[in-house]
Amino acid sequence: IAHTKQQKEFLQLKYGKKKSYVIHMGVTLKPIHKLKNKNMLFFGMLNYGKGVEYLITAMNWLPDYKLTVAGKAISGDYEKILREETAKNKFGNVKLDIRWVPEDTKEKYFEEADIMVFPYVWAPYQSAAMHDAFSYGIPVVVTDAGALGEVVKEFLCGRVVEQRSPKALASGIKAVHGNYETYQRGVMEYRNEANWAKTAEKHIAVYNETLQEYESHEEPFK
Image (cartoon, rainbow, N blue to C red; front, side, top):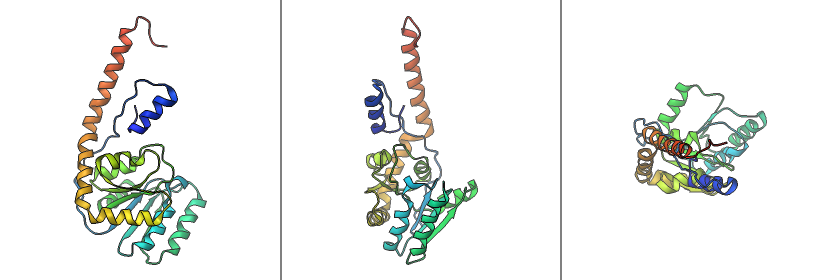
């Protein structure tokens, strides 16, 4: 079972799995966010694959926006990079909260965020933090890293931009903010498709199909 079509195709190609399935990562349905200002959020583990330094640099093209970067850094070296990039910021519109963020603070950040940004440079997986954004009805800007942008493109939940480009990130952020209702409708469509009730039903269907195939064999699978 994979979360995206690209991941499914990879499984089939690499492991010869004729029967692979796509089931979207589950989304918890929370009250829909209303656009408040120009508040952006990056939330998650901070490591070299996340490309957060490019997002911080992008804030030099976004003087009217504010960015919060929240999450635990995997190394002091990467944290140093982020702090150095923040110190270069011309407008003082970047806030760093580098630690293990408690649940109540996380909820506050999500409630305040208008757009979530995922500037990843490596992402062969789907993003739980992105699905947290969808839980709150928040559109996203993501890079074209791995499987990250598949859902965003398919459901028009936000914009997909090139990697390692602060200007591209800034442009994507402006585009999402300028057409917010359209991208939020895409988020709503994805929520309808990937809410936990539907996700559970799809898993049950796969399990039942697998059991039926198992029972149809004279000898048990090895």
